[in-house]
Length: 319
Image (cartoon, rainbow, N blue to C red; front, side, top):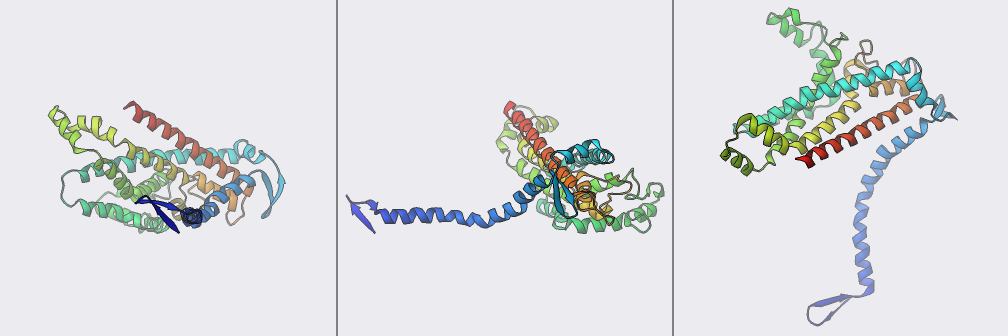
């Protein structure tokens, strides 16, 4: 119930105000389903892994509290120490290779699409199409394409007279990891192009016009205006690429299995974690060790992401 005083001024009674305040806070309940999913599928697994990393395991149950022993074994005991170093090195190569083969090409394609060319929407659609596929489907398809006996790639190379280039792309330790990196870059190229394109389209055209009046053109405009102004989108893609490179699992699992062959040449921290925690057909080593590795992986990603954010923010401030 409300009362009018002095024309237009409206005063609400205390029960009405309380009811209105109650309805205002009721809106927050709409966040509840999302919060339940977030806690159930994000917070709880991390908390459980953190807890498991301090215990030894007896079958499928926690056995004894061992403190930091699982972490110490991971970094000092053979073969865990060597396997961790091998997998970590592959993650670093995966990140660097993805930056070169995906981000650089995606930025050049975004520059091309952002210029005055015809069929921009068509090119954007075609480039983004692979992202609509499942990672497992992509892995299976490329396993067929790269088959050394009947695969389309080797057949095509033989057809055009380049038999010397045919090889078991996924069967050789020298080429397996780089081949998967290129497949992963092809799969994520469309998303990177869209991110870079959004950053390029946010640059005011007046800046380019002013630069042209001052005599700037070509590479000078690219390095002095375009790249610095597109730095927020470059920062986003660099961080997402780093996180994706250290979380990569599905593509390697689909193309090389949990053993990450041949001879662990495509092994990364996520596939190593899978073997430790859940094992292969011969049985897993330890859920406690796997949980310790998962916590280390979370710390690596979190600390490196924080460092990159600090670097890019400082770079942005200097500009």
